[in-house]
Every structure is written in structure tokens, then in C-alpha cells.
Amino acid sequence: MELFVEDEHYFGVDLGNSGIRLVELKLIHDKPTLVTYGDIELPFGLMSSDSPADLARVAATLKQLVGDARVSTKNVVAGLPASKVFASVLKLPQMADQEIAHTIRYQADKYIPMPIDQVKLDFYRMTQEKDVDEINVLLVATPTTVATKYLSIFQQAGLELMALDINAIAQSRSMVPNADLDVILIEFASLTADIGVISGGVPAMIRSVNVGAKSLIRAVAQNLGLDEAQAEQFVRKFGLTQTKLEGQVYRAMKPLLDNVVDEIKRSVDYFYQNNPGRKVEKVVITGGPAAIPEMPVYLANALGLAVEMGNPWQKISYANEFSDRLSGMALGYSTAVGLALRNMV
Image (cartoon, rainbow, N blue to C red; front, top):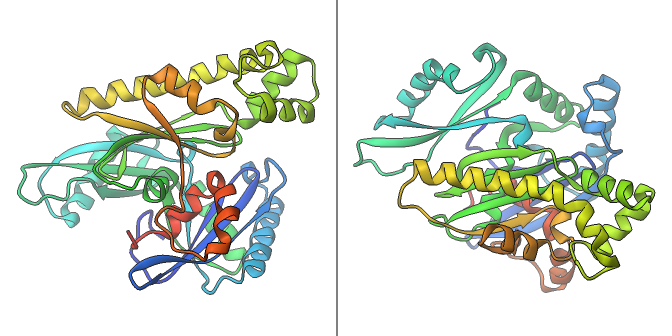
């Protein structure tokens, strides 16, 4: 199993902390076309467990979803969140891919904060031009224990894990229409906000901040004296609207979101330092909390950049009767669609 691999027909699976999503596509008349999709809830925290019994429950749930969605292949590409990977951009002399693979084995220990024999390593050539002296290479690693855990889940589900992709790469594939654009991708997940600075269609930087849906809801619950179910309703209804409920929900969430904004600013500054002349054009947000009222406005004001909601279906052909349903689920499917789009765009 490799982190990046070119292979035959497969479907994409996004294993999240609160649920599983899958998408299967096929190229029909050179257009990525939706074959099937589906999602199913997981008990929160199950994916965080390393217990064999819990992994077996995840596998059984995944197997059920695959059957219900009538997926036509057992080959899978799965995504890894930013919190599970180490990524760094290396500048190397122009060389062939075989030489890159050899070189990074000897340089990886400078960039990966773990012993090399305890990680799975791979790379992505960011510079495609052959007539330049220096190239950028994205070095990616994930702990062997993580790769083994994912492999076990898919094997128990009766599936063949062909590759582990990086969520940020999958999301850029599904939501960034022009690979020449430099954009910031933010995925608000259950436990984290994952930030990717995307340049040339791949991450120039990946960061993860421990601010997710659960922490936002918890902050509102504590500040307003609510239970978490009530707090979630308040977050969904009032969000970051300062004129609603006297701005109490906004004020409860703002300190946490300010941490996300600060990390985005640091990431952009670092990107500019290492890529003079480049310019981040916009921010694309995805994940459930992206739909919090006024979230795009809040981020646009804080960052001074245009902010848009991600649409992973923009490159996909599907029947007209699915339009409303797919549009309503867009924020949750950015990773699964991007995984299924590998080798198609």
C-alpha cells in the first residue's frame, strides 16, 4: 500500500469521527459521472479508538454502507486528515521520480518528527516542468500505526485499500476548479479545523487546529449555561450573527475561531516568504461548521479575502433530479468526491 498510487477503478471513502461517506465515479464520455454515494453515522470517537473491537465496529459499519450504496468495486482510496500526516515541501535539483524517491529517504529525517522506520513515506512532484533547474516536491508521511489501522478496517470490511490520499489534496481536486490558483482550504471537522494552502493543485502547507464542531458547541454550552443538544441548536440557528440573542453565541465562539484565523494568517505569511510573487486569491470552506450562519462573512472580514462555500460536485455529471439533494450535502462530501476523482482530473 502506498500513499499515492495510480490504479484501476476504485471508490473514495472518507472515514470521519462522526460518520463515513463514500463516492463512486466513472468516466463516461470523458466526464466524471456519479455512480453512487452514501453516508452513515458512527458513534462519536469510534475512529479515534485503537481497540480491536472498535475497529471491527467501524469495519462492519463501512461494510453495511458499501452494500447499501451498491458500490461496484472493492478497490478503495481513503483519505487521511491533516492531524494524521506530516507534510513538507522540499526544494530539490531537477531529477527523475526514481531519484526523488531515493533522495527523500535520506533527507526525510530532517522534516519528519518521528523515526523514519516508523512512518510510511511518499512524495508528490509539485513542479511538472522538465526545463527548470530546481523543483518543489511535497514530502508526505503518516505513522505506520495509522496506515496499519486503516488497512485493518478495510480488510475486515472485505475491501482492498489501494492507497491513502491526503484530505487536503482530495479537497483541492474536488473544489478548486483551476489548478493555477493559490487558495486556502479550510475543513471544519468534528474535532479540528484543517488548513491547507493550495498551490498548483497540491498543498504547499497543511496545518491542523484543535477547533471543531464539538469545541464550538461546548463553548456555547458553557457560556450560555445550556446542555450540548441545546447549544448545537443555538449554533445552527444564530451562528456568528451578532444581532441575534444579543451576540452571546457569537462571543462564545469567537475566541476559538480567532485561533483558526491566527493560524491561517501565519500559514499565509510563511507561504509568501517561501513563494515570492504568489498571491492567495480566496478561501474555500467545507465541513459541517462551514454552514454556521455568517461564518463566511466572519472569515472574510478577519482575513481580508473572499470566502466561498466549497462545492465538490462542480466537476461531476449527475442526473438533474439529484441536484437539490447533492447541493444540500455538498459540505460533507468534499473529501469523498476528491478521493473518487483521482486520475480523472
